[in-house]
Length: 126
Image (tube, rainbow, N blue to C red; front, side, top):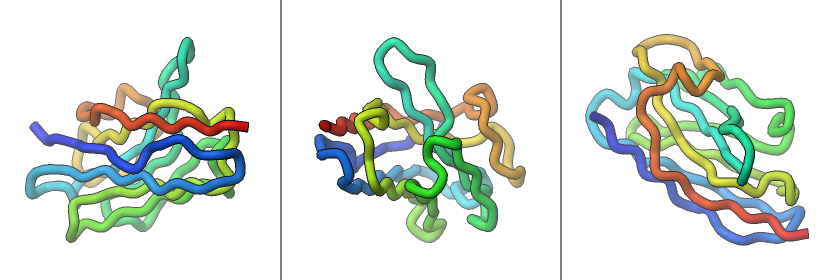
């Protein structure tokens, strides 16, 4: 079972930037698409951004497009989420996740991902 460990969250002001990282264990990281999700108090977990196994294709939620950027470094078994122009509405716990199947393009449904990190808190003050 792969282990995913997120880092980089914190308390920032509106308009600031943060870069989240997710380090994965194991030797098969490069075979899987990866995603970032978030969950705010009282709300369902929602897709934020995803990247396919090679890094050649990405998807974003409407709320993230233009402000967030997902990338990966397969040599370091790490996926990143660069978040710019943060808003108070971005406040949530952010999770990285690994797709269930290898060699497929990124999807957006939480049920398509079977490995999850513990999450990192992002709080954006106004």
